[in-house]
Image (tube, rainbow, N blue to C red):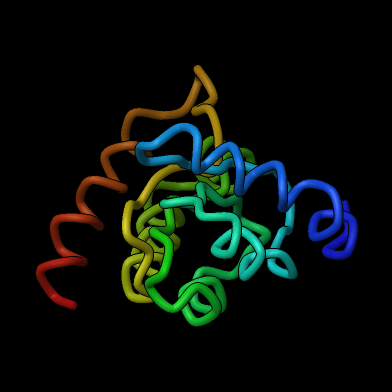
Length: 131
């Protein structure tokens, strides 16, 4: 949905939902939602789980630590289809950008090479210690 449609129709629903839940909430939306990041903060979500189409550096700048960011390692192109070095590089990018929780963008493909999953762990161990 467009930012205007989100603002007019979903924002009030999400604000009410977050008030009623009374605990931490995480929003996951597929695709590039860069143009709605501030609206997600306004909705009261504690965290946003985002996909590779959203640039991690831009997301960190826009939400300004008002909402945690979770993601955004690309499943198909990097995690499943890339090398462990590709995964490591994308993980480091997220870490250096300031992503709060490093994670795949969505469900992990079942046939993902174990070496690629381990590359996320290695980037995390080395990344947060170095940043």
